[in-house]
Image 1 (cartoon, rainbow, N blue to C red):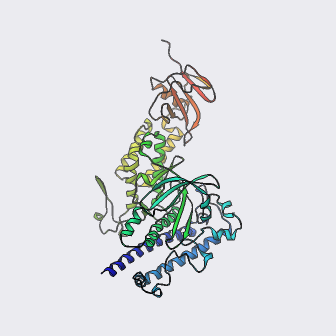
Image 2 (cartoon, rainbow, N blue to C red):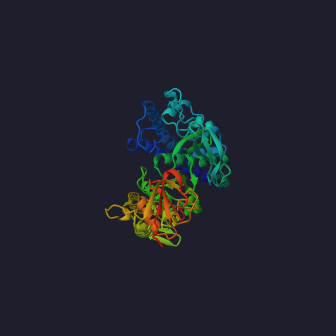
Length: 509
């Protein structure tokens, strides 16, 4: 019985390993195909635009594609040799082991073809074809095994069930990066060891999760997905892997609630655009099973998905609509069963409602500009009841952004603005004087609000009995709106070439 139990455990473990590796291979093959080719390089280029790459790197991609095909054949041979592998686990002679002993074997016969899933240096083929640092010249932020020694570790950035994350600075260009590797004493490793598997196999299983994430980061590249900067397969029997991404700042609900509505709307918009992208991704609709605040970070104010461990294309099988109840704490939604026997829009609806309950409900409805409130309320209602898809949600939020950015939400008459009630004092300011707190402020301890122009600022000042004037600055928000500082004391102006002071002309008493 004990031998049988060990064989079952080993079989299950190998099945999981093969599934994960197969997923990574399929994702990478889809990425390398002409239909999803964004320049031909293993790492997708920046989202600023596609770039044609030199023939040497294209040849490297062809080698990768051939190697990945070999991996598919290896997996097939693994499945045919499960009995032999189980026998080897029971300490049978080495001759009983299958032809391909491990998927990540560091002793491959052809060392020059150590590519994806078993390379010691991920960029070795490209550097062989191009002397010196040609790859760095083409992609200065690409980081491979050789570049790891040029990253100065500055401290821990976080940890989870499977991974530990360190932050560092890449000396080549001063870029702040995050490095992910397996947490050898983490939850997943302990759980795996408790099942009776040895440390080597548990480590390989955990490392395959990082392999999967590397593949998904390539296939799902988007402005709201953390950017993959490089990775290194260190070799060895456990398939040790390190991935390198841009460094983000963890989301904190307290800081989010204290942010301006404009910044909170930016996060909500980014999430909606991300979910629309996931719903129509190159690998099909993608669901985020572990959807929570900790899976996201902020990079220069833009929200980004940073953890894809638990992302896949799962949708339940069904025979009837009644098989497709999407359940959340306190509520549920009835989806339909499609002709393929899958619950329709399962991943999209799940992602969207999670975005609503974890983000939108806290970020969107508070301190909304009055003219935009009906549009924001509609977004809240439609996502709370899942009447919209992620694409519809993103489109409506983009419409709100357009109205806000263009000033169309002000509904002005086409007439010359009336600013006669204010005295304009160019190149003047009242720094540190007359500040007071207000709603929608971009700064604590002051009333700093983004406005479309001086006329909107004047209307806002008119509506506040405490306001005596405002300073229009050259500071701009993320959508290019100028920032105005509202004041309750404008009596002591000083010179400032970058600001304009507007003082309210008070009626004689």
